[in-house]
Length: 157
Image (cartoon, rainbow, N blue to C red; front, side):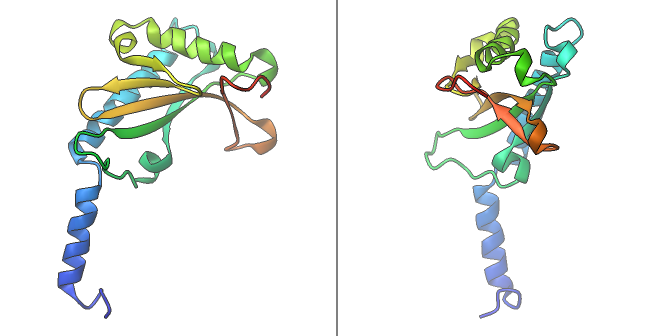
């Protein structure tokens, strides 16, 4: 059976897709929050300002394929990259992660939401989502998209 010829199946599939997707209002809220976090990280006077931090979504949020959590009260997981223009020879993984973490901790409302993970900083929001902020550097041999990621268990980039 060709689904393009059967409007009932198309309608059902569209309804299922809408039910699985992140609600538009929550998507908009997440974009506002990660834009705010990005602005804070690179604000005038920030220790990160000289490294022009860029924060942007990755994974399913970037691709527009976010899937509703399985648990009824589950959270949407929004993965963000925090790319700073710094050379790997200028810092260690731990220093970079702490630099970003310290900046997030320096704002009271973010500090209250913040928890450290192995590779990233997690910001918990009460409206059914959290954002994982992954500190990273450009990876020159893999430009324009290659990144070097922080990880507590690794010592070398």
